[in-house]
Image 1 (tube, rainbow, N blue to C red):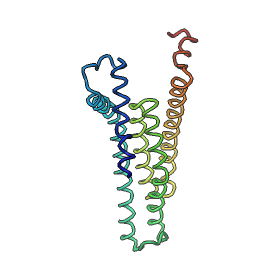
Image 2 (image 1 turned 180 degrees about the vertical axis):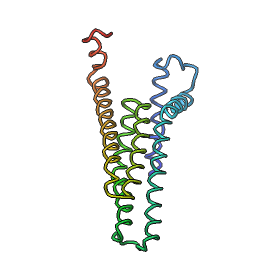
Image 3 (image 1 turned 180 degrees about the horizontal axis):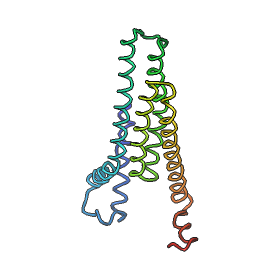
Image 4 (image 1 turned 120 degrees about the horizontal axis):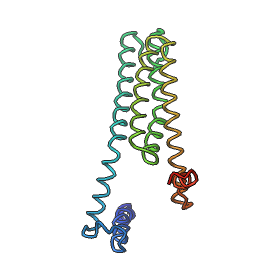
Length: 194
């Protein structure tokens, strides 16, 4: 029964592209079938998002590294799960990993939102800076509680930049798509730049 319901959803992109294809929306791709056109468009989108994907994979690997450090600290300081209390050295490693994990969903969300709606290149660079800041945060916190502060402030600033890019990108896209107003073009006209 589920497959019967899913089949129309699978055909929907092909139907939409067929209509666009027949109506001449994609003039440069008239010789392509709807399926080939779908594949070409998808490949182009994937190529554009490779930087964001690479930063995401690096972020996941960084989270895995932090988790492994907690496992090593548990063994080194003889703190068996589920205990989270032990020597201060263990607790700092544990808290550093937990803090980084708490912010990771926020980071991934604003990284992709910023990349899709604002700029993939700038978002990927900010993502790399954020991951570097979080790595320094983890190392600093593992050594001393004070060692976490400078990298914490740095990564928070980068996160706020990504939030700003995301907000601006969503606002500009919303205005262009739903209000039929290109704010950048309007701003350029008002400042006599265009």
